[in-house]
Image (cartoon, rainbow, N blue to C red; front, side, top):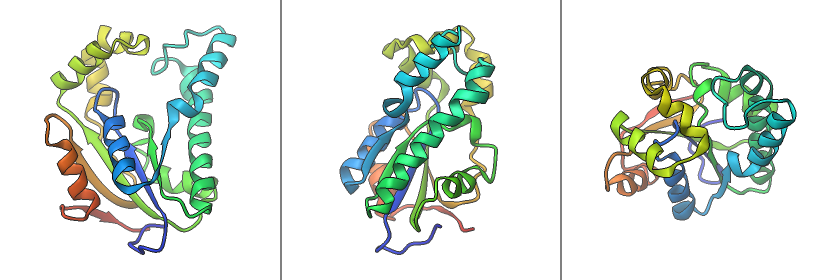
Length: 203
C-alpha cells in the first residue's frame, strides 16, 4: 500500500488540528502536484450539521459531543475515503484534507480505513501539520468560526488533549510540517519533491 512506484497514483493524507494551517498545506500540495483536493468539511459538513440539529444537538459542538464522535464522525471519514477511492480507481492522485485527531493514536486506523474503502494500490504519503499553541490560538480567534468557540473557551484543556498528538499510524510514508512562518510552502514543496528527511513506514 505504500512504496514509491511513480506509475501509481498518490494519496496525500494531510492531517492536523484546527488552526494548524492544514488546509493551506493541503491546497498547496494539490496545486503543485495536480492531485484532486478532497476536503472532508466540503464533502460532509452540511449533512453533519443537519444530522446533529435533527438529533437535537448543537451543530457547532463536536469534540465534546458523544453522538457526533461515536456515530456521525466515522461516517464523515467513510465518505472521504470513498470519494478518494473513486479518484484513485481512475488513476487520479488525491489530497485528503481532514483533522483525523481522534484517530491518530490508533496504529491501524489508516490501513483499516483504506481496506474498508477498497482503495486500489497507491502510494501513501501522510503529512502531519503542526503549529505552536500561540499561533494556533491566534488563527482560531482570527477566523471566528462558531465551531471554535468551545475550543477557545477551554483553551488549555483543548490544547492538552488535541494540540500535541503524535500520529501512530503504521502505514505509508510520514512527514511533518511546522507551519509557524512564511517558509511553509518551501518546506512542503521540498517534502513533496523528496528533498527532505522522512519517516518511512511500510506494511
